[in-house]
Length: 211
Ligand code: 3PG
View 1 (cartoon, rainbow, N blue to C red):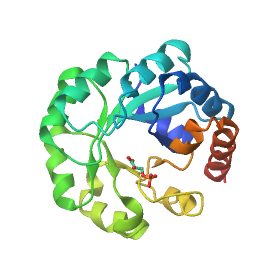
View 2: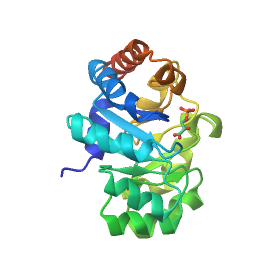
View 3: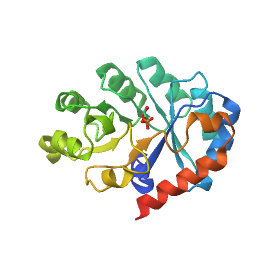
View 4: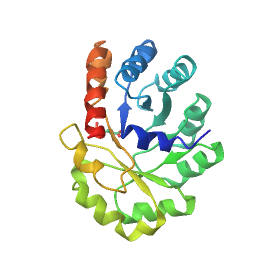
């Protein structure tokens, strides 16, 4: 498989999704596809996550689907078995990074400080989630934190507290690979069957990326 993170760069945004019901998986996938976003991070915050990933993988293979909120080695293994093409976490835990390496899963650990980023270096991960981006201090915080590591070519996925209003500010930074967020496919909209709204949000995000 090609490096899944190259798809992140193409779409510019990655919807972070917490989904409760497996039967919503395909309507959600279709809403994202219609909105021009063939990418989804399904977070391991709900019991349905692994099955949702498996279903999208099987029935909508044109979507690149991965797992988020992977907080322990067991979740990494389950995500990998369900077909997750990539994994992310809000923080950096060497045990989780080791598990991802063992599973051969491309993985983006979460970082907030230079110390967090230093902890990822033995694993040679080239992508890190910058979390929670909005409240750490915005784009200038990422510029400052990443500056001493700039020769390593690490790219970042700012996530947390970002929406349509601030998306463009983050995309301007050369070290930003893509921006993550739950605003595109909100749990409330999925629960309410409001898939048209998800398509509209995806289209709006893609339009900002294209500018
Ligand atoms: C995540 O898991 O990445 C965050 O919960 C997403 O943050 P947001 O809801 O502020 O977009």
